[in-house]
Length: 73
Image (cartoon, rainbow, N blue to C red; front, side, top):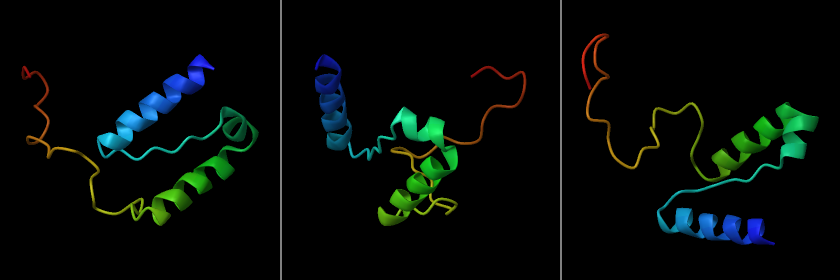
């Protein structure tokens, strides 16, 4: 029961931060990964996230392009 309580607490915290989650049981992925992927895409569509759109799901905008090779961060 501790794992279920931890999952519930984590889910509550993520929702409070505006993060949507989707739990996909490992059994579904192991039995047919295509079914799992189709379900994820379906839920994203229902939530208006539209995979493949130009929207980037970041809480904060990126600070610019990544550094060039060899540059310190």
